[in-house]
Length: 507
Ligand code: XMP
Image (cartoon, rainbow, N blue to C red):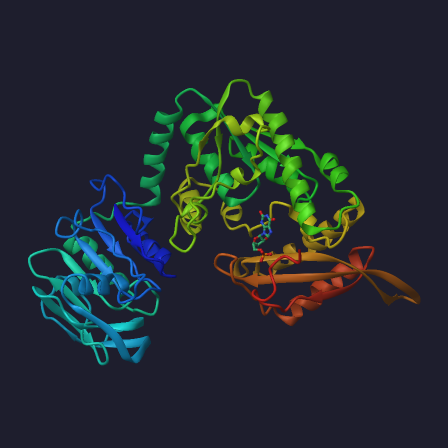
């Protein structure tokens, strides 16, 4: 596998993804947490960084166990690191070097640039430039503005590139990474979803043996894929719990439960709607609503896990972005469940050993693993849905009547998206029930009823998002359907705010 040392670049995760797209496994570690055992890694990549090697705060970890001993590739800051701390010189560049550039020179017969021709577009993003190369190096490529765009150390497999091969705009970036990892480091491209499934199932069998595992299913992609993977490894010893918090979508509890049963999972549906709604009654503050739901969930889950005798493990659908320890987000891997810890009063299920089979996967990889496990496409393509469910889409206090109204509205909107073939083009969609009544007229009657807002966004990770330009005809039809079919609603609006500055959910 490949070790990617993160120096804090915003693109570090992308390097990881590109490498995995080549069917080679990669792991990202902060530059200051070099793994003790390097024998597992076949190659190392140094990421970019917002820092300058010339600054007082420049980071330069000791790479003596790596350089010259394993194939090493420095990208951007990584390249400047290899130049600056090994006898070359790095200076502030006179011209800004951001964005598109083209390779104007590539050394001939160089395996690192196999299948890459001069003129190839690369993406630059740096304020410093490598002025002089260290001794014992060969120049491999230049652009019009950046002479030392790529170089290698003679007699060792150490390469350095100033451009970012991981970004989409570097047209041959993936080819360059492949050349480095396959031609130079001699790695095999065998890390496929099928291989992941086989290996993980074998590991889970070994790790868990005959012990029992509890897993909370949410209806979402991650927990479902984790469940199927574990089921394949340990069968009936996996006990899944699917809690209805009364804030799910229309018919979701029964539909999803049926689907899980159809997949052969040993799943218990627990309808705790009343318990959640009772505890939420009269509460309008978004954060308090979230906390109440979190607390009641833990109570319900704790009760349920007691019913599974002799359970030893708690399985979670944690994925890689949740645990990545990046330089920008030090503070360590986050296990969501830990944020609920309170001294002296740990629920029993938290004393279980934790198993997280998807911990090393990105979301799209989880989907591919799911497909390789034969999980239904519709389930794998489901939009994200927040844990607190409709509670944070009902602005203000929550009542069973409001939940019922919003479930109907949401169902019309989501079914419509599917019918119009728009569902898969949207990253997330939903409806908000606003705490406003407005005047309308139906027939000859004056109405004074609720307003709902529809929201559909495109995004890759939910961190930033933009509203989707849904066809007017679709919005027109959906609005009509909602007002005609859902008593209590007389007005529909469409949310055209991006994130930032708005957020996806209204609460
Ligand atoms: P925001 O509203 O912060 O949402 O732009 C970003 C993504 O996170 C989801 N979300 C939540 N998920 N518990 C969750 O499990 C929450 O409290 C929560 N709040 C927001 C939201 O649906 C979107 O996908």
